[in-house]
Length: 594
DNA sequence: AGTATTGACT
Image (cartoon, rainbow, N blue to C red; front, side):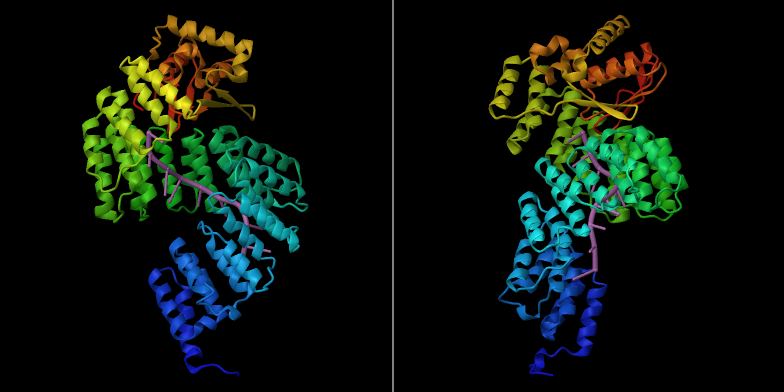
């Protein structure tokens, strides 16, 4: 053995102790103890210990990972000559899913003349994909992978597709290019690309690619099905979801717990919560996500009592609820008007379960009071919160002020919100709503001008309708389908029939959305009405009509849809941004409470 | 030592 100062020679026991700590290191405390060992006993020259340390730090979140990075990779404090590719790879791996930039590590590797190997680039791309705007880094690293001759490796390509695909419009083109160049594509390659489409809000492209996959030679696996299911949730594509459920049922893919959870969630979110519960009942194994998905599914369908029952059944089985479970449970209570039950569960969170309420839980409680018209209680609750209220909380309260006509309070809170969050266009729309309700049209026009001036816009209403495997999209105020004569004629017919049946257009909410010039026509042009007209034209009598909307249904459309359901003898199910409406015989299952 | 992945306040 060569020269080695005594205090730096690692003792066998110290090494064992350190490795042992790091092996099961899921606490910050153990990590710190291991760190002490590393520094005291000369283990910093032990690559294995360093690697374990980086890996353990990774599982402890961004803070720990950056401590590890600082300790191990700052040139002044580290024994650089002990580094190898394996160690830096591990450190790279430890970065994601934290948004820590991997380039300092990667360039250190190159500076030390260590060669990247086939593991380096997958880790590198994965870390890049977790960054806030990863496109420039992805193309730089892509160039590097090409230079080092790893661009043809399938692991590299799969992570590269993923990294490009999460960067939005420009990246998705590059992702597709890499995808098309991938010669021996596997189910994983398809999953990466399909998942990329879904993350970029292109769920329709995701489904198109899945269809291409089905006529090809590559068999989808459970993960592929899961990514397609998230596209289904996005589009509310119930038929495809049911088909995928059947596909899994026939044993075509591995029926993993994850996949079953995704199916339960998708079935509920696409409108068939009973199918979701059937599947849930049949699952051989369930975890907290399975239970939460069912509770959340019931919440969306306004079945609050059942959601509470499922929650109680879960506790009877000895499963401990987590923070997300409580969000779903409290949502269920607020959407079903279960004020006392909701308040009790909220109190029990800290007392019985030791879960500190987060802003989302407070949000549920504000919603619970707000929906029920208890504006004062809601306001008091907000003032007594231990966390600073966020814009979501304020908007919940504002919606309540609008519905229950607390115009002065609403206006005041909205102005405060705009001060806090001046660049969010919808806040100005909220304010203009209060001006309109007060008939202060000049003020309302002023808001409009301010918005135009600052280049702000409101989100356009958009409805989706699935017909024969195709998802049709309808946008408020016109667009391609509206120009079809048949739809136009149908809209006229619907308008006249429901008026004759007693429908009173209450434009008070309508004109908030659309400029005055469009007022007269506005009735006819909300996207859910266009979709309904299209559906009535293209489906056989008696068929249930299912529509998915990106915003909340307005009072006027809600009322119109009730009349349509009665006159045309159709059940119409509309998925809101947050819940389901089911119109049947002139009534809605939400009992006008939403 | 790797690639794609399930539940969440308006």
